[in-house]
Length: 314
Image (cartoon, one colour):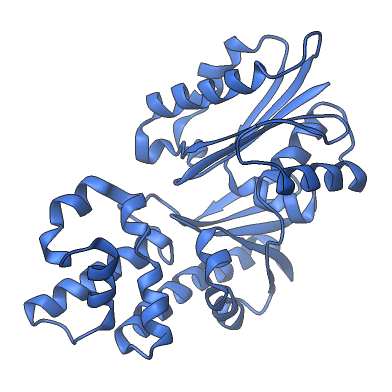
């Protein structure tokens, strides 16, 4: 039996084909599949192309048993991904959920808990007795506090305020200049054409400037941390007692000081830990369960070893 698991956010789509023993038979790493960024039609087409590509790698006579897709913003589009994809996979068990579920399952299995996403976007997803509750993350035009996009946006704002004489001098300006290869104010069309993911790619300037003692960077850093902490206090209502929280996403993994600061100011009921597993593991666990296979430690270890040692594309 063969299974497919997908983890897709605003920056990339990681998809794997594996068997019931955890052996990896195919992997695809492509652009992000968040419909809030690329539109639902393009998200459907891209997801289908990834699944069909992996299906082709199944050995002759092999059976595709289950597909689990954890894709950012799935909740907002009324099941359209499934409606588009399912007809191409008759007889295959398929489930489509937000990518945050991968993060929860990869660390906690099917236990209650939550995932705090700190990547291109941000949000908190709580899972309580199988029910998923979504807090924050209402799209970058409205609410994505503490995310890579928000940090990058605030970095540009600080730089432009300095240019105008409205704001204090900040090291962020020179760091943006260095990363872009020219003055930030000369790159307005480039910034707007690049969009959310491009702006998020400059989040690192905030952390770099903060390490060098920049006061503006410190303000941006603290603003982001407290925006994420708000989510943990809101989650108290649903758990009604101490709860486990998994922090995951590129901002947390690349800048550990961010997760450490969040741990200090988060709800005292939240036991927050940084995810040590790749998010795709949660998708693997969910796909196996959907296909009637218990995701044992041995299966998970086998998958992780081949996943970490193998190339990004198989």
